[in-house]
Length: 582
Image (cartoon, rainbow, N blue to C red; front, top):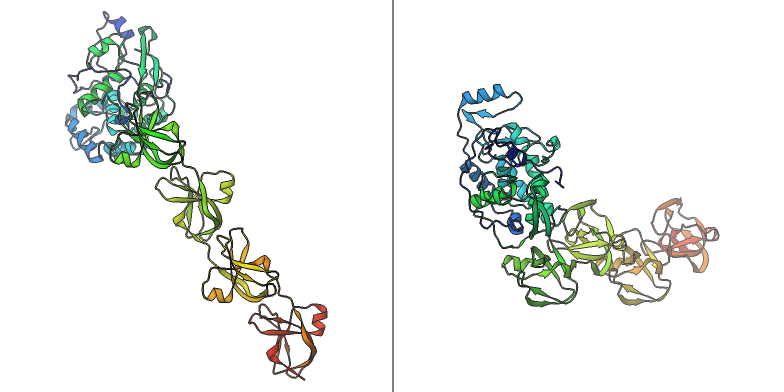
């Protein structure tokens, strides 16, 4: 088969007579019964069996068809582990070294009561019902499909005395017809999850050896048994053929659960068990859940259509963004996608997948810096999977946004926008960048006629004349990545406006005194750094010095610089309040 590591021979009955039927044995696709009784004697009708449509995509993908409790009840109803023949257990273990049967509390433990750990461990861990239900949820595969698979491959649903060999290859995954099973896939949990993953892959458009359309499919692993062209019309059917790459011939269909010359029974038995146990195969396709519900955009003006007739229903504008949650194959074999609202209301209208594209990122209203509130992660907006960690208080510039699959805005950084990286941070995890205190509150001078601005939108506000001296105490990054400085008064009143730092003198220059002159120090004093008010050398009371320039210090008071320090351009001065004219 093409998928080499997938299935084992289907269980069959041993109806082979020695000698006379040797030729039949060589050309029949039969499996071992392990000496156990199969409870299914009468088969459902195969009159409606269609090799091109064994099961619909909807039925294979109906992962909520049974709860875990319902799965457990079904397993118990089919097999209550009633065999209490201890002497038979002793006989089996004595005659089959290396094979283990689980006998406890006076009876053989069968599938409905067994627990499974990792690998081939049995006797503790999860129940079969939990493992089946969990795989169904994780891979969005109908648990009924997995139950039927277990029965048609190894008969485990009804087997009253299963052993560790049966469990290690429970679904036949990794057991091709022409080679030994791969130990890589041994173990009940391993078998169930790998089988579910394979079905999910095909159901979601992944590789298959028998794609939709016409395929030549054999009746038996022996090519001499022949085959025929089959028009495969559902991905679910294609998935069954990837798992068991043979169709039943006329004799096999006529035999019910029995055997026939050149027969292959896997897909026939799948159909029969599904009919007998779960009410039958739906011979009409239905909507199935998309793998990842998500927002998509309509490429151009188009129409919603009815899935089967193709009749146009409602017009939809190009550029419309809608959330899509279910899908169906139309009669042309094209995927048609249904919106979340129509899925909820079970309305049969959809848009062809080829007329949709992933919802694009759009420009945010105002590209700007924002701050991360708490430790969070970038996410993939389509799958919601978590990506890189982003630490609390990280400041980033954001320029584009997209609706994620929960309908929340997710914001993308400027850098990721430029590189078209599909990751973003939820808007709810971000806040507008706040003003922060400047390193040293100080007076600065406006160096040209400018305006206050709104730092996020860059909108111009009140004009400020060249030469204006203002005290600044807080700052913020504006949308151009420039520091924008807010005055002391606006900081106190929390007014959202500021002046771009580049429009302000960096040090607020000393200016010449109105009249250079000598002054005397009143009381003990210090030279200070005018902006930070840091105290330097002490100056004794009564000291007389000649002063030549002045500057506003961090308290808004004039600070006077000596003639000598002016000549040397030293950034230190004495507060005017500590000086008097002489």
